Image (cartoon, rainbow, N blue to C red; front, side):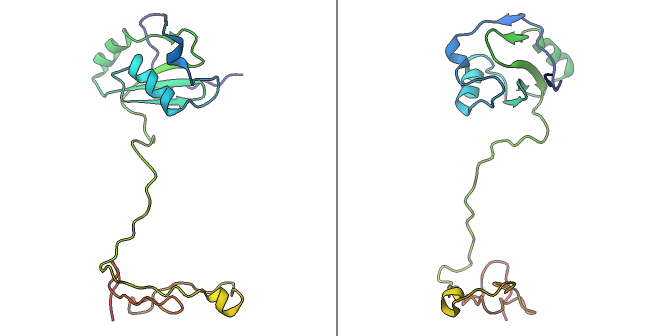
Length: 163
């Protein structure tokens, strides 16, 4: 039994749009397509869309927000399916909710108030020859200053109080 959720609307234009086979490279049945395949489909077939989402064998073409009447008129020009494509098509008026946009993995960059801050980098396992389960490696004391064993020589780390 196939599960094809109805998330958007169906195109009401040509029953079946024919495209060059190279545009559909990278699309396989029941597999999430790569970024290049999506970009090729957007650039060749759906240049006005703002995003595409692949869910269970369906490509959802997310169009810019417009009035409902304008969206329904736009659907008149959109194909129902693409010939030879291993996916169904649906159209959505605005981006889908809860879908990440333009997110990239970011490497954390801790910000220090001073460049010459030093931290206690003592390897206590090597020094003592064992690890003490449950040992606190870092904590903040009553006055907001780090408590041993993780003493920092810099008291001006962003967000910390001194003395």
